[in-house]
Image (cartoon, rainbow, N blue to C red):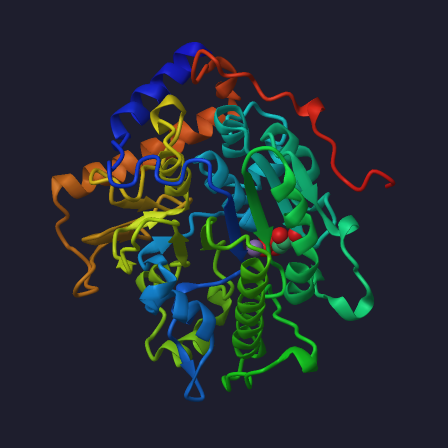
Length: 430
Ligand code: GP9
Ligand code: MN
């Protein structure tokens, strides 16, 4: 009911972080290119295998100041069983997924006030999602309509010949290549675009055609872990090619470019091999720390911060982006806070109720000191309050999703509820 949504609004209002004036509105009206790094964990950044960098191109975005990227090295994924779908959901709604299943599937016809629709209504953006898999996977062809996604270029738009496909779908190199004409078309529309590129090749079980491998596998006893580095390298090369093509087509210079990892690629079933890779035993705390995924952003005309160490998560991305565009995030129900704000809330809930802060971590019912890695025998009242707040926040989130509570919420006077019937995906001759 509307009482329930008022309770949620009171909470998100209190949590809200005021924008940083140095960033507010600085990206208004610019094209946004959002690049999804499938299964990419941050430990790959700067990691050397056989004395070689695994991801030299991404590393250069982190370290080469002239490329003007800010890299958040304490950014975490917050996904649950919905994996990729949860990451998409978190970043375009600033809501968490569900404790079980995927909100994309089980809450695919809820009322949402999502990023694509807000950008369209406020600044005439056209949103598009690019993905070389069937449109029905993760119920995308339904839920995208409820999120106001204008265009969905699924596998029916791509040349899916056998030599171009592996594992779940189109390989990343032909994917980016073939996406260029579609991106160019978007650029011809009135108004800017919000383009989301979903890669796929660096996915469990990390299969790669021989000719696509340019680094030798790792040499643990675990083939999955060994191959993980090869598909990561392939993804890195596909990005290098994509950046080159964006520049050539004049789409690079004035676009916001955002890069993120969706979730872990190496699960706890591979702890033994991972301890060989990291040189440390994979304790529950270490595993929580391995849930870091990259977040990088380049904002044309704004100097990068180099490496930003703030503790942040996927739920924080949408309010950050809205503020960059000059849109007040506090008009919407959002659980995250602006990552560039002085008031950004530095705690990162995981879907299971564990969480990380800049100072301590809470993992499997135990508080740990971040510096020593030792359990904290007597947690302070503040720590216990933090734990309660995380649990409260997640329970409010679940009330929103289970009760479809955004039905009762009007963000602004001029807000027009998303009409799912207005969207149609798939090639017209399908
Ligand atoms: C499938 C792709 C993979 O289309 O997005 O999803 P995941 O298995 O990573 O959730
Ligand atoms: Mn995924």
